[in-house]
Length: 481
Image (cartoon, rainbow, N blue to C red; front, side, top):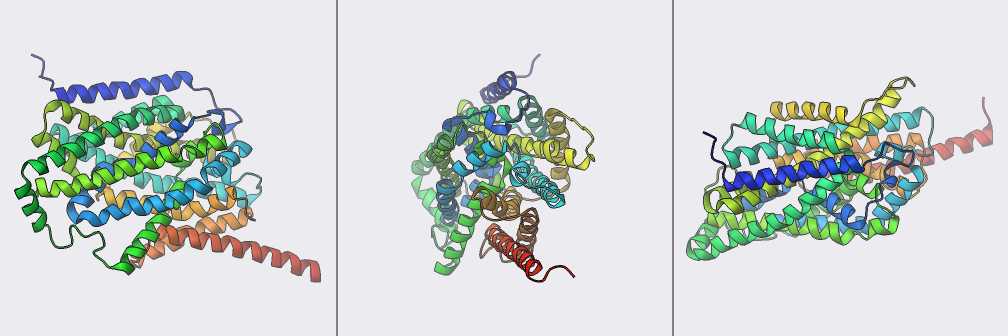
């Protein structure tokens, strides 16, 4: 006898087949690496906006955002709104310039973009350090996605944690290895459509349940505490620091995340790339705010959930029919998979394009992107097994640190501000060190460490350039001893 397959499982497996189909289609459309970098791919505004949006969403949206809304209430709507402020400034200034500079430099990775027109040991150090920051930070970010995937599969199909983690990671690693960068874009766009449908269904369902028993709902909401429905529980000063800190983090995220920057590099033109802003921001804000509100309302519908980050799957498993549950299962998978896929491809590009050529002493070392993706995927899966934590902490910490380290350097480069290989090297080091110290001193709650890293990096670059000019001037005036 064959085991009975539910409607939820059918919908999930159909989504999985469609995802692998998009990856195979991308493999057929892909060309071998050229000297033109990602600019050769020529994505339109929809592919840029939706693929960047789904990659940015991450498992945080369907686990962490739900958990924050459930545990702390209305105040966490401020997080996406703060992010929106940073995104508005970022999209006004940077994506078109990133695309234009990428076309000029023919860059595939952030290291190639940062070292364009630079040479010498300092340039090599910048490339290697950039790739190292990417690998370390994105490994933590990817591990957070594996953790989110584990919670999703374990809750949806009643699987043991170890089996859920292994299955989810292997599925993502497999289709990431097939499609490469173009596959990442195609599957992200497919998953964006699923994400929009799932978000509408989830929010509508939980609101319907709240309205169906409004007396119990408001009683449960009242028991959540006095500050649960307050948007500013900490007062004006705390709120201002929170908003400005995460607005700065959004700018750092846009400039420092290679899996996002790669979409801007691959746009068909600077104008087409910039015109994706409303697609990206509309998608990110709608899904993020909706999932936070879902968690908030869920607190009144189901007040006793032990792990609030599993609230989405728990609600549908217990209350909704199999078909819609299958759509939500597909939605959660798509959300987490899109980011995991983009992260794996970005790390693989850093290894194959940046680290191996520079660490091989000029010898020709060629390892395919697919093989590198398999290896990196396995390593990050092991990290997630050994390091336990919440999706919120893993995702936000990794995103903030990479923004602190790399955003200032990318900003300097695409805005064509004065710099040298040495000054960019100092910029990256200063950004990472200042962010780590800021977090260690417990100040991240007052102002996100990404903003501190960006500010420190920009000041350090100016100081290094000024020092270099002063040294040249002194040598000109007094000559060598």
